[in-house]
Amino acid sequence: MKNYIYILIICGFIIGCNTSKPITSNKQKSEKELTAINNDTVTIANEELEYQIIIIEPGFNSWLISNAKPEGFYSQQFLENRNYQYVLEWNNRVLQPQRFNPNLYEMQIDYQQGIDYGYEVNYKLYNYFIYFQLTYKQRLGPFVPRI
Image (cartoon, rainbow, N blue to C red; front, side, top):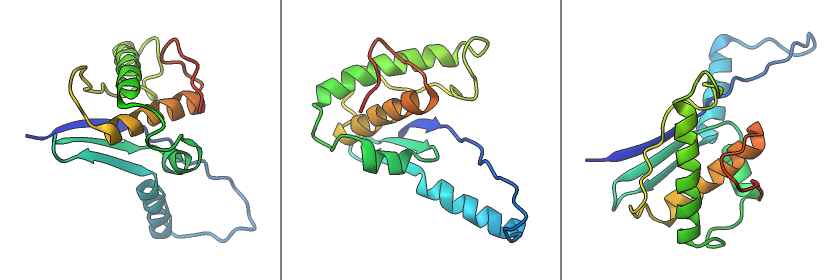
């Protein structure tokens, strides 16, 4: 039985009008958008534990490669502690759509303390929370999000 942790934040593409640009067909646009979404989809899997995180967020993959601290910089215990605190606040915000933007906090994250999700899952989840806080100017805990 596989358990999945999903973080799906899909932001709309902003398309500017400019008459000097050639008009593309809907088929070409959908292929370009599909390529952009595929390039910005990060899948994190721990096959041994049967956990998987799928993050669909425009810009996250390139941010992770160019801005995040390298793997091994943080200890797994540090990542687990921060992720647990961030997940608690995230899930609280999902349950309060009248108070917090439901377009940002769409679904709960099933992350439980005491389960060893592995380093890669914790590393990328932590970095997603940092990316999210910096990009959307949110604060998910007492810590100032920084790289």
